[in-house]
Length: 50
Image (tube, rainbow, N blue to C red; front, top):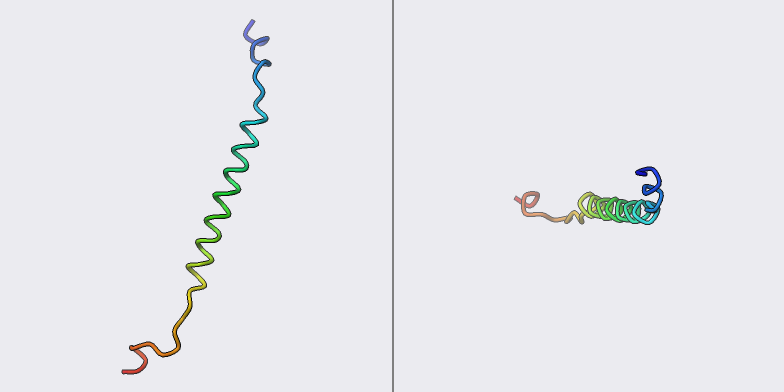
């Protein structure tokens, strides 16, 4: 009886939504790392002038 009821639920939609959410999270982390690594470096800082 239990095996007959298991086939009534479709897992495809949940798997697709989790995959999309993971892709969005990975993209946001990559953008954040890109901003952190590519910060503008000022040419004339106070430490160099002293």
